[in-house]
Amino acid sequence: MLSEFILTDEQKAIKEAAREFAEKEFPKYAEECDREEKFPFELWKKTAELGFIGMSFPEEYGGQGAGILDSCLVVEEFWRVDGGLGQILSTTFGSEQILAFGNEEQKKKYLPPLAKGKAICCACYTEPQAGSDVAGIKTRADKVGDEYVINGTKMFITNGTIADYYIVLARTDPNPP
Image 1 (cartoon, rainbow, N blue to C red):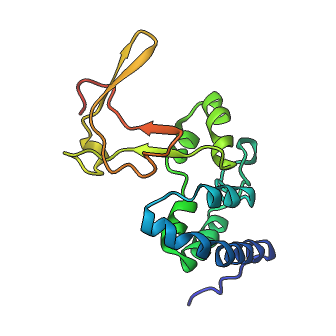
Image 2 (cartoon, rainbow, N blue to C red):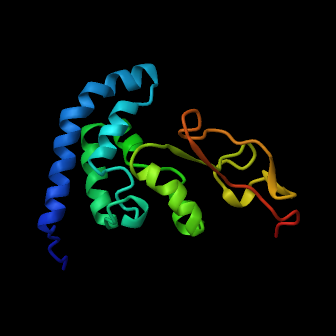
Image 3 (cartoon, rainbow, N blue to C red):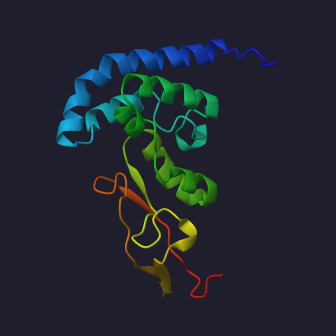
């Protein structure tokens, strides 16, 4: 027997706000974005102003501290109106790695601009010989002094041409398992 799934009043309000925003704003941008393969910077900023970008980021890093269900409700409404814009506006590529593995200084530096729509991030994983199999990557990051020198090839990087921040998956161990 399935339990009845009930949204809280706050979740209903989030869902309604996302639906109203998408229905009002997406039609103004969808055709041009598809036809011209353009990133909707103006729409990105509007989406961020409403708190939909990075909404699951903790509040101390500029997000709403929303739960995964809250984020899913927004994604569902965005995709219901337009899948392309829904994908673009409901993803902060690379931010998950900063949240999970970044130190406090990195989180405070990079996450607030992402959550506020003032910066765009991308995750550089895919490689010609490995595809998206992260265990098969060949890109190297060798420490030289106080810096890392990255050597390798990445491809098919979503937001790669417009990003402000790049999360690059690379090997630092010269003898991986």
